[in-house]
Length: 212
Image (cartoon, rainbow, N blue to C red; front, side, top):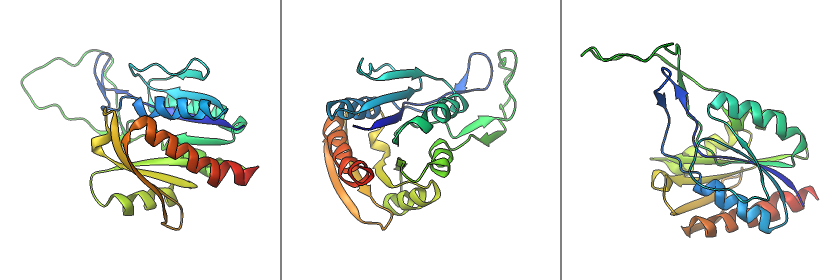
């Protein structure tokens, strides 16, 4: 049995007290991966952004809102875990300044100065011990396989799951699982429950059994 940290859902970066930047990630893939992990007997910790899905009661759930909060929670939990599945879609940008009061409409264009948020999977990948593993997700709209492999290397992942924008807030999707050499270990389409089973099976054979 492994202790697996799963990130799930979107994050939010506020521009004023009532408005924020985010994305349409639903948490459905994170939910499916949590279920698949528990079915295999693993101990699961889920760090989730704001979603409407319910995670299995057997998992320990940590609620967060911003990318910084998700990173902080993961850094606290990851040292005690065997591996990470980074399926969350953290907001990649945050405003340089957050308005203290609601920004009023005045008929003029609103300019937002944005900076990148911390990369959670890359940060954890850099800090992992020799016996730890990380699996990232790469959602791309073009050159999916090439960009997924680039992310695998940049984020120090052991495997990467490539998917497309059609996966967002959908109950079915298509994925490819790639290793650092660029080999396609699995390519599957269908309900996210099926994809999660294939992903966990690949992680078990490639990473968990290797560690054991």
